[in-house]
Amino acid sequence: MLLYFCNMLVLDGKLVSAAVKEDLKAETQKLISAGNRAPHLAAILVGSNGASETYVASKVKNCEEIGFISTLVRFEETIDEATLLAKIAELNQDPSVDGILVQLPLPKQIKEQKVIEAIDPSKDVDGFHPSSAGKLMQGLPSFIPATPYGIMMMLEFFKLETKGKHAVVIGRSNIVGRPMSILLSSNIPNGNCTVTICHSHTHNLKEICLQADILVAALGRPEFVKADMIKTGAVVIDVGITRVTDATAKKGFRIKGDVAYDEVAPLTSAITPVPGGVGLMTIAGLLKNTLQAYKTNNGI
Ligand code: NAP
Image (cartoon, rainbow, N blue to C red; front, side, top):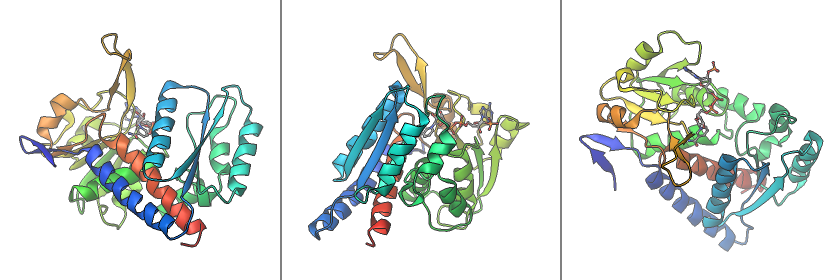
């Protein structure tokens, strides 16, 4: 059921991700019934960062829910780079593994870029390998980083018009902002926007945001986007997830997005909540990429 408040549509990630997972589960069951093995995602977690633990546990749980196999490989925070690279090499060679993800961030002694580049591009279900990023930029089939992929699925699900719109993306990271700007500006369904990409050196950010028909906030600054930055009727996609200390919360923190939801939502035509918005779609993107890797690598 679609939720509207005063003509404002809540872009409910639970609804969309449940629909995507339902499709993936049905397809997986069909593949298994036809005598194939289940798709297999291997996740590597280094250390015991609270947020990373939560993300990886959720990815593993979601795999199991739709009938994928998942393997969680855990290493101590003190692990050296060579040991991690050796494990990735082993998973690259393992024909029973379709997708590999290494949960970021990694401890200081390990170079993230080296780890990203060590993953076989055919198993790069996070879409962070330069080969995947290059293909995305050229409009070739590739693994789309899970968060932007999830956002594109959301735009499609809710039939939000993007063609010819001005999209403003705040943030230019390789995992969210930059691929998001490429997708929105590409000549694809749910693309064809005119895109402005902003970052920490952007002048007049507020004025630029005020011109946005679609605003994607991916900067990691809790409640940074305020009502005075929003054009009436804009679509607002809040990617931010920050744990903000709050002694009154059961866990001692609350999850905050990059958008001040209560003051911004009434001005919008559609907005993602945090939590319950983009975060759930990120997992849907990862699962779709894993099935894609499985099919391609097994000639299905
Ligand atoms: P990141 O790598 O830290 O990138 C942040 C980007 O925001 C950078 O490009 C930075 O500019 C820009 N920025 C920072 N402060 C700014 C400011 N005051 N004005 C304009 N631009 C500013 O972060 P990320 O990995 O992209 O993640 C962004 C947020 O999304 C975080 O809260 C993260 O937790 C969340 N996230 C959520 C999901 C999900 O599933 N919902 C997935 C991934 C990430 P410079 O390039 O100039 O430094």
